[in-house]
Image (tube, rainbow, N blue to C red; front, top):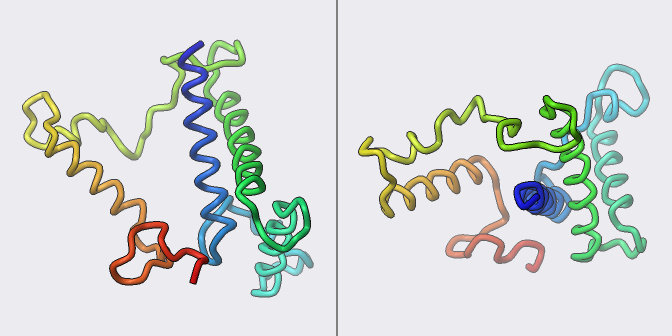
Length: 165
C-alpha cells in the first residue's frame, strides 16, 4: 500500500512539472501530439499555423476560468490529469498479474539507463560516496537541461526570470 502511494506521488509530481514546463513557456515540450492531431486540415502537411492553433487550444483547455492566464491551480490540475493518464497507461502495460496495481517486481526497468547504481559507483567499490552521488546528480541535471533554453539570463538561478521579465 505504501509503495502504491509513493508511486502515485512520484507520477503526480512528474506530471505537474511537465505540465508547468509545457504550458508556462513557449518552446518547452509538453505531451507529444501525433502528426494526425497537428495536421488539422488532413492534407498530409503540418503548417506553423496548425502547430500554433494546437498550442493555443491546449492553453485554452488548461485555462479553465478563461482569463487568458494560467494560475498555479490550473497548471496543477492539468499536471494531475496528465499524471493520472500516464499512471493508467503504466499499469495497463506492466500489470502482469492483472490485479490493477503494480508490485515491486512489475515496476518497469529502464532499458536505456542500465544499472543506475553501477553508473553512480564510478570507482566500482560497491558503495556510492557523497562525491559520486553529487556527481551523478549534477550529470542528471545537465542531461535534463541539455539543449533547452530555460529562459535564464546569465547569472540567474533555475526558475528565476521565467515569465517575470
